[in-house]
Image (tube, rainbow, N blue to C red; front, top):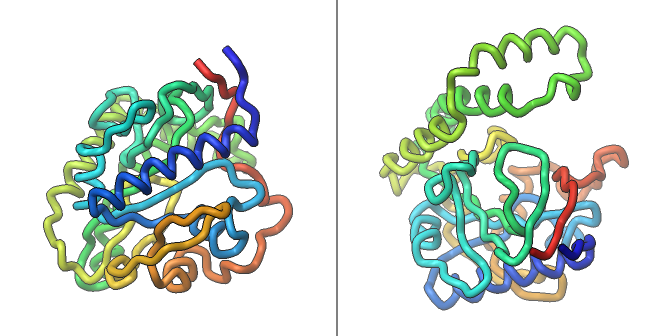
Length: 265
């Protein structure tokens, strides 16, 4: 197998994003660049220099359409409902010609971009926060299952993690993730004032936003190509990152993923 270097990784990710963009435009599916990808578009005109992935997001109805309807010759959509070995609640569009060996909580897939559903919450921020926190059990199970004790730097937290690992041993991450997804889909409050990203444990309460942020979309430049983003990027990024134009400390300017190797099949 031929190894794929970092520059080629980004080229393939951009190719996937272009395919997704073209499909969404032609099928009237609204999406936005999201999280660090949208931050990179606004602050850097493309990738954050140390970033290694691409994120997009859609309101749940568009996400459900996309996961069923997306078709491509070399890329495919997958999530915990299409593959029992995938332990995450959001989706990925994968280049099936490649393989990525990665540490973490899901099977080794090909080079991919992440597709996040944005779900209905409640009509007040306080109720939305309570609803958000009610999903903490799934977060606890996943963190306990996959976090390495050797990575815990505070000594007294190590026995707590070991005990938690024993407590969650009988639980299946995949089954608990499916329960969460099914619960989110059952929330039919399509006019709730607040919506949020609920399917990944890495993101916190700053993902709770007013639905109005997700109504209007506009083109945005990313790596000299044009994609879509929520129109009020400032409201989105302030909620996600606070003072988003301020660079993080040097020690935080590191890639998010633990890629061990990337190959063409």
